[in-house]
Image: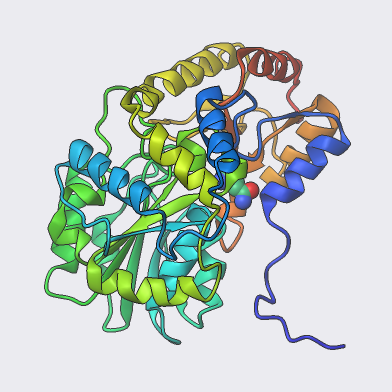
Length: 384
Ligand code: GLN
């Protein structure tokens, strides 16, 4: 059989490739972003109670009503914005699915989508599979901030959407109030949609405020805002997230969603609805994860790696420029094979494979895991 590929230039994701390599070489896996410690027992218990009490059939297509209500309450408490649980929120099988569905809802062939690079690796294939065109704008190196003047110059009559992501994967940069103001200025009076990937919503450090689009009802009216329970509750394997938008946009989003997965795992939704009453569980997350970033950085200070700024997410990037001239893929492979530590090379997040000699480490791990990794990394000698 011959199949004409819809994604001819795409291979297997870097996360799968690097995690396989970590297993093969028995390396400490600081590549793919997932915690290696247990999630809350209480939440696991709430989900199993939902199962044993018979909540095992389809939930409504948009999500379990009690979960939608609790999310609307959370949004109001955190961001002072009223969203309607019936019309504005849809539960999805993960944040990535929410992003794909939003793009598929909006994009027509030939539409342009402004994407900042480095970009989470699903964005560009998600745009291209819809026949649309990614307009790539590099974030400023090494702060990874958004060059708004350049964005303004790239807007055309075909610009359908701007994608933003804060806290940012892979770099840990975060959007500030000034960025929101510039974004608003650019979209004002246009039909440009916004996709805001906020899966690391609570993982923000150093006293910074998460500049959610949900804070800004005027922007929310043209936005799809995507979240992940996996990142918030240390349960990435559950693959449950949600999207918040405005009623007319969400109506179209649900048309796409209903004929794809229809609805999401009911007992998990019931457990999550109950667990959302525990505000502390998500409010303490930033400081819990910041301690891990700080611990990892203090250990890494003994190595020749040079840290780049990280203000949020699971990730901390390091430059290895002083260590080697290899390209970042070769370097990451050698790090796994010879030193037993797996990372993600940043070129994987650029369409043209741009190589700034930077690798991404996931620090959302047990302290002993981070110690074990850095012990190995400290043995690295410059390869020149
Ligand atoms: N979001 C995770 C990361 O950036 C990976 C998720 C996945 O493997 N699809 O590492």
